[in-house]
Amino acid sequence: MSYSLPIETDRLTLRRYIETDYDDLLKLQANPDVARYLLHDVRTPEEVKEALAGRMADVPMDRDGQALTAAVILRDGGLHLGEVTLFMNSVEHRTGELGYVFHPESHGHGYAAEAAVELLRIGFEQLGMHRIIARLDARNTGSANLAKRLGLRPEAHFVQNEYLKGEWTDELVFALLEAEWGLRRSEAGS
Image (tube, rainbow, N blue to C red; front, side, top):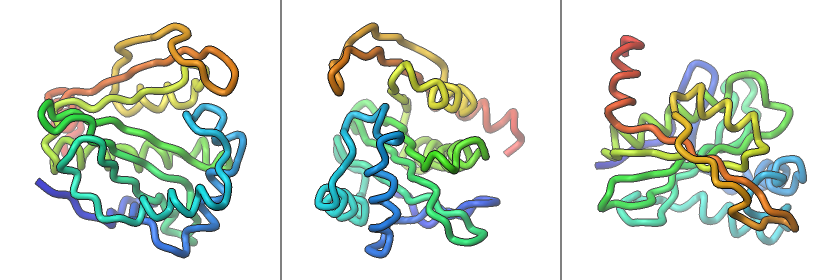
């Protein structure tokens, strides 16, 4: 199975990163408010260059550990809003993981949901995934609310399971099965 980018939604374009996205990616990854709930700290310009190179690569999504990251661009004006990522956790078990990171000024407009649903569609309908999860810092209520809006159900709350950035943090895990996705799509009439 395969997937294709770019994807156009009503308001957004999801596309591969290109070299000229460096400044936008730096603005995203060097922002302490963005990095607060992520596994990595604020990134240096050199780290962002490495991250950009990985995002520009053509990823077939046919091996464990691969990731498809799409830049999310506002169609009206071309503003970089953030990114959505689909990880291939296990080819054998047909499992993936959804991630999303957006500039704080783009929060509250539904952009993340509009973009993330497209990666769920790719995962289930084009890559044949059976299950997609989202893992997040329990303090990130905005991210948890987004997972719920996308139809992912809460499955686990791990208490103080990771020591990140000098403190113990809780992790929430949400999940959606292919059958649940299909039911959701049929109820929506699409």
